[in-house]
Image 1 (cartoon, rainbow, N blue to C red):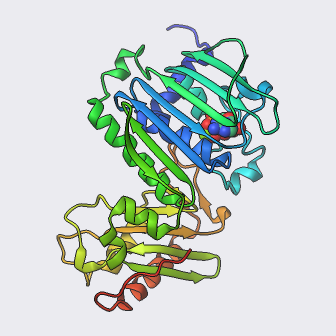
Image 2: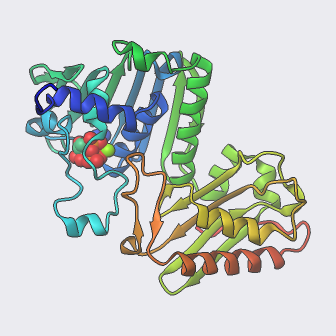
Length: 338
Ligand code: ADP
Ligand code: MG
């Protein structure tokens, strides 16, 4: 039996990368969430070959100070929480401090950033976790991050990647989720030099119209319900326009796209009597609640949540949705709350 030994950081990060960055779309999500947490108003994304060759993000957020650039790539280093108490009420999209470290361990990454009032920007490169020197760079504001050749040096992982077209579709879906959750921010997406999305800042109705179709918005039902600390708002699909697939179901908890059994159950129940049994509802709904009453630290990708009082959440969702659905008159247009 070999002796027990502590694994080198590089290997630890690569193991974590298997969970956090399954494919380019997950790396893209981690980086876009960082840009949003940094207060960016504009997020520009460039991809080559479905993100396998290059994922580049240009943001206009607060930036990272020179001395903190290596820390940004260090595992379990974060500016978002500092204590267990903070973890109980996380309000940012990130907090685990492992996104960039994981990505940097399985790619060639360049991080260029200009911190708020700094006189110029700085850049650091990491080649499969090995950091280079910090060098001065030119950048007018925010952070630009480039991830080259994700998983190229890890054949075991690389072979799980699908065609460029499929990887791009996953990336585009990720951008769609984040863009729906942040209609006030500008998003642009280029793939292999070709523009794919250009979303100007606006309200939810406009953003949903651009991403989910004008018909979804014009025939949809506006939801705006509150009960104590719980609030549900957004647009839920007109049952007469049920879809044959579940691909237009977007639910966000405190601004985070999630998939959750309690939520799905409430939606199914609410639509049960109004939707034909083989059709699926389309929806773009936002649940807001006290961060302390939901645990987002369930899985490294944070797509799952646990509600502290799931029965209360279920009842609130079912009541709100049933009310919204019964209040519709055929053809009534949605007025979406801001
Ligand atoms: P987390 O988001 O969980 O804190 P990450 O590894 O994704 O962990 O990022 C580490 C840190 O790097 C963040 O806490 C943040 O301070 C900084 N950072 C990363 N990306 C950006 C960005 N685009 N703008 C400003 N700061 C950033
Ligand atoms: Mg992060």
